[in-house]
Image (cartoon, rainbow, N blue to C red; front, top):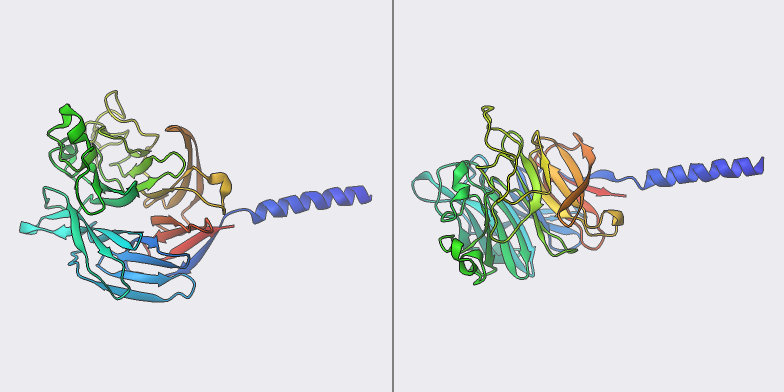
Length: 357
């Protein structure tokens, strides 16, 4: 009898232990106005952008919010406004839709020294040519080996992504001061001598996620397709993801076919989604909170309102798991708290959530 009771108790404890290890969502702070991006500056504080132009210093522990003054002139226009923010070694990098001549705008990037009183930004990159469109800015940023990688959307202009003499529809790589690396594709490949000197890769549509993996030191990105055709893949030097020759499995919003999902001569993604999930931000997980996820991609979505975990190795897809869906709304951004490994999510509705055990 005692043995039976012990066995029942043992399995009950195992069940409770498994239940306690399930990820739990908690809303940390809310009431932000169209937030787009956030970045940790220490364990408790983040900097956040609101599309209208605000940069906020937010304490996740005390719930204190403070607006930091800055010198950028922001025009919020459809998908444009103040977008990505990235903190690195006392420097702040932001991407935004910069107002140019004759009603045109560009994906631009500015840099400032961190100061809680005022940020004095200087432009270090602007996409050329400026385009009259409020769509597809891309705008995510990541640093690798003291080089800044920038995703530049094709602004809804399709085949411009196949024109390497123009920035829209590309991945850009520059030094942290805006100077051009001398080993970019234009300078190393005779067939690419007409490429814009900042361009690292071409053929993307609207890449809204980019991350550096600490495990293989590669850069990965997500790309928002048309009606279907979202993907997750690796940023590859001098290559071409194929938009709008390829449709990645999707169609135009009118329903007409774009092109094949993939064909030789173009970069092949690791994972495609048809229909579209509206892939937004991403990270390669590295932390203690969910140690078994280390090396996996965590990808957020807008339309699908989900957080997905992609297991892959050597650019080969292994499996996908939907961690949750239709719970907190459209998820715009994701960050990992470095010391704890807890996951933080930013929603379009204006809240920051934590995912932890």
